[in-house]
Image (cartoon, rainbow over all chains, first blue to last red; front, side, top):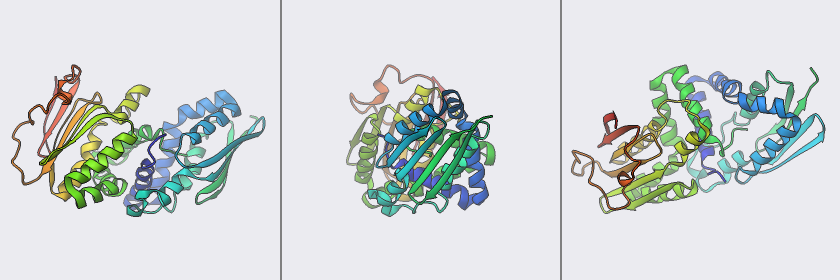
Length: 145
Length: 181
């Protein structure tokens, strides 16, 4: 299990961009992260199909500390990631060191949408996200091209 | 979601993004400001309030959690770490990633500002292969002048693989040499 204190580093990084250069710079950074760094993952999803998307997120959230996430595949083209308790938001609010850190960045939850949309821009997937603030529902849908 | 299990890869990529988008000074500012006193504020508070024993508590807890191969030693006058297998650089080496060319630099990038503010100086050397040593001591202690002597059998400098790649050496928190061995 990875050390949850790295969530403080992610949160501090989001604040760094927005404090130093404004919210558009933070969004630009997230878009670059998805478009560039996460392209191998996008290719993996494209090649492996929704089964690979489901496998990836199941394993991913199982390895994040203190979350409660269920991944399902209601049909052949759809994967639903039901984030009942977001591990990041929980750690930032409830971990022992939370008292000496800034609260979750006001845009924290936007990174999931922005990074993932940028990552999937050139794939056959559509990504939707509802909710936030520690609980959300993410849907990956493979569309016919 | 960007999580913590593969955080090191994102961290490395972010260093290079900051460098190419905003310049090297902006990357150093990120480490010195937002990593030192926001991300690692729990370390800063411990070291500010409890000095050398605060360092022992912080690094003991953190490096144990990261399953690092290391040894820490708290002396009356200094706190020392010998790192035999850095979990952070080790992860990047395992996956073959090197987005930012000088990943190891980030540790001094955030640790030195904390030590500066808390009244300590750092002697440190790393070999860019996942091995390094650190000694933190009071800023008003006797200047080392040179790297400290070997500190017993656990000193990382005894390892056969220690002398490889490029070595960067800091004494009293100043970079004094970067050399190929």
